[in-house]
Image (cartoon, rainbow, N blue to C red; front, side, top):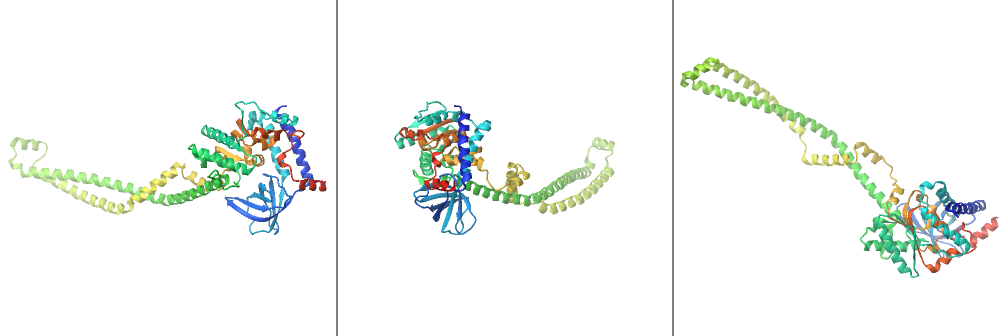
Length: 497
């Protein structure tokens, strides 16, 4: 059997189950009471409901929450059920306290999402890396034959089998730390959310002891049910909490950028005016310097003429004859002095005009050092961001952060197989390594859907004595053990059929 044959066989079973559920309608519904909001992080809210003793809701399946006060229904995801207590993650609050709600799981929609993922794996195989997923084909074959699956070790598929759970967790944490240090993107799967919380805390502590920044490397996809595990605060590792902090920080940075940009726009015309006035002032000062230089030259010539006239009678005869040959005598020297003095008077007037203009331009061109430094810093910030056009685009961008890019940059994403199979966000995210903890409790079909997101390697962890749970004879490979709904559903389906 090839991987494509296996997936097509699974699709036949999934589509049949989906069609049966659609024909029967929303057969399963549970009335929940004791509605209580546990916590809210970002846009996600964790609610606790008390359900009847014989009620059982499928985990990681979308559920419609219909309040009893006839307000608008909302949607959520069932994260866990402990006896009569059901934990539901919702994207909206119920608003005013309600006495009871009706929970209607959309099992058909969940099966449809899983079938679409498998169908994309064979229809759009260029977007998937199916090498690791092919190693799971023997699991389905031996499962149908009722045989134990003992996969051979290879670079693509490795196992961590050990009966001691604590030792198995230590090996898993050590392996994850090595993968993260090797810059691998790891998808860590656990069979349920409480187990995922425990493993996440254990791995986070191992990363912290290894000197790694676990807050920026680990992302727990879905709200953690536990507040802490292994001494590590899980709320800080939740994907929604991380993206909420990132959103809040980006909003704060955007508000600061907007303030800087507005101040930059306010200072730009002022600094342009000051710059132009400074250029005018520099030109006038340069003119003043030239006029003063000419004045000094004329003063030096007048002084020379006056000295010559004072000493003219005492000059040697040959020197006076030489001066007369170039037209310099007492009469011509007096004319030169008068000419120089007239030129000096004209220069005085021009210097007075230039100095008056300087006194007029100096306050107009003056700008404090603090304002100049502030403008230079703002201009540098705008230039680094790509200019005013780019800044306007950043400020006009939508406030909704890119969840796919945010998740793609996390080194370790810890979640459950149901969330991977049912959440469309994982259709566009790829990983290097898949680590499946307690693999005997994970439905092989979920494992197959998650393996299609992996490029390089599969790591399966679990108790070797519990592998028989994965090889129960007589159960079709396409059915999902974790989606077996309570006897209440079977009775409702029978009555509706």
